[in-house]
Length: 142
Image (cartoon, rainbow, N blue to C red; front, side, top):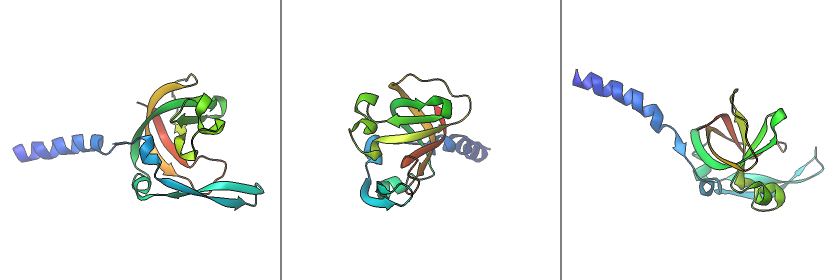
């Protein structure tokens, strides 16, 4: 009976440990080279993800940062290491300092630079020049 209780407890508790809290330092494990885009007729930063980042791919993670609701009516949200005035789009940091957030339905509204922690599935993007290198899918505010 005790053995069965322990097994049930482990099954109930183990999903909580499947989530990984990452930091912006973790996401800095990437380097970039210039790559030509025929479609855009220009170069873009092509990511080469390091082993720490690759180990997080398709895992449920937590990440804290500044929310940038860039086009909320279109569902375009970015979580940034830095506030909007000094984010990647404004010239500070690189593409590794932002993550595009794809929320589950029913998420709250956000103010610019609101500090939040999101939980979701980390996806890595190398080839879609219209999407950030880091995506957090099925995201929720935690």
